[in-house]
Length: 618
Image (cartoon, rainbow, N blue to C red; front, side, top):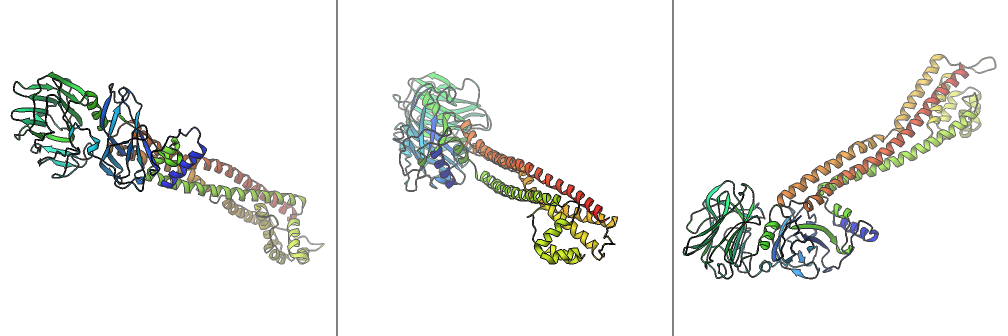
C-alpha cells in the first residue's frame, strides 16, 4: 500500500493540476509524511471567543481520519508535532497507540489558540525509520498543571502524567480499558482513589485552583463526590446531586454551594465537569459552559484529594471517570472550554486535514487523499474488480479481432461465390484443384466424389476463418456424399431427392448453430462484469462505510472531517465497479451487434445455398 501511495504522490508532483496543493517547506527530511491538524475556535466550531494559551489538546487518530498506521513506528516513536511555522517542535505524549486497532490518543501542548478564528494549525510528522522516542509527558503541561490522571495504568502503577508525579496512595477503582479517552476508572459505590497532600496539590487563595473530570453516571444519585480536596474541615468539592452537578467550597464560615442552574446531566452520557476557585468566586462549568457562580472568600486548602467519594468514605460515586485534572491556578473559561471541546466524543475544536508526503513537496490531491483512506477490504474488492476488468478487456479485444477476421473472410468468400454463377460446386472444385492439382479436378469430372471429399477435407482453407466458407464446405461435402455412386454421362444426370436436400439443410443448420456458439463464446464473462461489477463495488462501499462508522464510534471523533475521508474512500469501490461495468456494457453491445450481423449472413447463405443445390440436382 505504501508503494501505491508513493506512486500516486509522484504522479501528482509531475502532473499537478487542479487537484494539487501548493508546496510548503519540510521540517526534516528524515520524516516521510505529515498531517495537518487545524483548530476551529469560530462559532461554527468550538465557539471560543477569547485566546487560550498552553492548552493540552487531545489528538484522536483513527481509521476515520488517519489510515496510515502502517507507515509509523509500531509504538509511535516517530511521531512529532510541529507548530504552524513548521519549525518549532511541540511537547506531546502518547496515552495510547495501537496500530492493530488503528487508534491513538495523543496529547500535545498548543502554545496559543486564537479566539474566534479557525486559522491556527499544527503538523503531525510521521514515517521516520531512525527516530527515537520523543514523547515528553511532563512537558505537555505547564507548571500550573499539578495532576493529570488518564487512568491508563493498572492500580499500583504510576498515574500522574505531569512532572509533579503526584501518585495516589490508595487506588480501589476498576480500570476500564474502553472508556472515553482510552482507559477510565469505574466506581460502583464502594471504591475511591486517594492522593495524599503535597506542596503542589493545594488551593492557595492568591492563585486559586481548577479541578475537572469527565463523568458518566447511569442514574441520578444523592450528594456523591466526583472529587474532593479536604483539609481539617475545609474542602473544595465537585459532585453530583440527583442529576445535577454542584460545587462546594467550605472554610471557616458557611459553605458556599453552586448548583447547575439550568438542565441536568444526561445519564449514560459523558459530561465534562469543572470547578474553579479563585479571584473571589467559585464557578461551576458543565461541558465548557458556566453553569453557576458565587462570590466566596477563598481559604487555603491542602490535605487529601479523594476521587469518587469523601475522605471519610462517604458520598460514594457510582459511575465512571476519565481524564481527571487539577491545576493550582484559576484557569480562565476559554482554557476549560478548549479542554471540554477537544476531548469529548464530539470535538469541534480539532479538524483533521490531509496527509502529505515529502517527495511530493508537501502537496496532495483530493483523489490521492481519497485513495489513501481506502481500507484493506476496499482494496480487496478493487483488486477483484481489476482482475475482472482486465479479463473483460482481453476478451473484448480478442473477440473484436476474431469477428473482424470472420467478417473479412466472409466478404471474400461471398465475392468469389457469386462469381461462380449457377454452378454451386464450381468454387469447391476450384479450391480443390488449387490444393489437389489435376487429380482432384479429374476425380470431380469423372464422378469420383469420395476421392474429392478426402482431398478437400485435408486441404487448406482459402478464406481464413470465414464461417460462410465452412458452411459451404460442409454443404458440398454432404452433397457429394449423396451423389457418390451415381453414374455420370451424357444421357444420365445425377440428382438429389427432396429428403436428401432437407438432410443437407439440417446438416448446415447444425453447423450454423455450432459456429454461432463459437461466435458467442466468452461473451458471458462480459455480462458477469456488467451485472456483477456494480454489486461488488456496492459491497465494498457498504463495508467501508460500516468500518468508518465503527472507527468513529470507537474513537469518539464525530465531525465532518472524521466522516468524509472514510466515506469518500468507501465510494471508490462503487466507482471501480462502475468503471468495470460501463466499458463492458458498451463493448458487449457492439460485439453482440457484430455477431448478429454474421449470424444473419450465415442464415441467408444457408437458404441461398440449399436453393441452388435444389435447382442444380433436382
